[in-house]
View 1 (cartoon, rainbow, N blue to C red):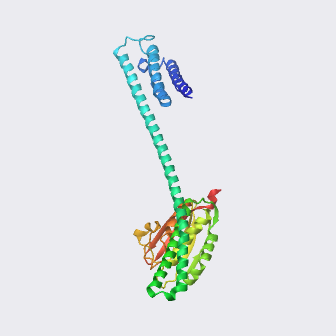
View 2 (view 1 turned 120 degrees about the vertical axis):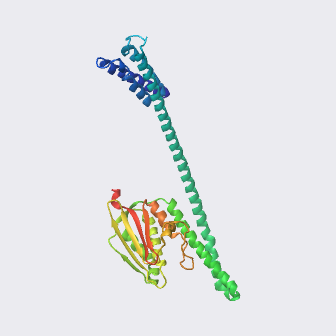
Length: 358
């Protein structure tokens, strides 16, 4: 293989010199001796470009010999040279050598760039594999944590049911606190599991009916909607999108849950859902009349465990919008928010239209 490569490179250099000689010979009546190397210099540079330094030097030397013998006075022999012919010869050599050197530096720079890209790609792939492995470990650890938490809650509940009359007031209060803390921790682990699943579970990408997903989410939240006397307006029809139905359902569930939860006291939650479509994407809007978000927090809220309010004011784990952000990343979409304090929030999901997959 190596010998074949050498043969091609030096064969190309020989061919370029032969072509240059033929072209210069045919144009000899029109070109004077000042242009003795007119075609040989480009031939040497092309040989260096496609064959590297060795073929370039060979072409330069071949052009020097042929140009000197056939086109530079005295014709058909080397020297003696007049000052003009000697200057032409020196210019040809210096120009050719500089050109070959520049081309070789270009080759080395490009080779180094390719090598650097390969190293970056290799290390990126290695880092991604490590992250996936870490996510898998964390997922299993979080999954295994739920069993003792459920046991803790069950036993404290039994303790209160069967032995509350034997406990003094502080003891019963401690048991209730343990039970509440175990439930809160279980909810946090559950959200962590949902977040981990979004990072590593395979996607089933297909055409998804957004109207059906919204109806399903509203149906699942019907008890909370009724208890809060919430009003939900859905402008149908909602367009179909290309994505994973389960991931998009998680995104919608978290946004609607937040819209129901983060409202001022004694305020009836009102949620408006609609969509519009352009030639590139579908924009799904969820607008509420909640407490709103300060401008400086409107990007921070998508982080993991980010809470803007104390737990006793608005319960939750701080994972809901992180799940929304991760879900939209997996769907190759975007989520944006516009909000004002006391005037509610407006979330916009940018998704792929279903017809883009045809």
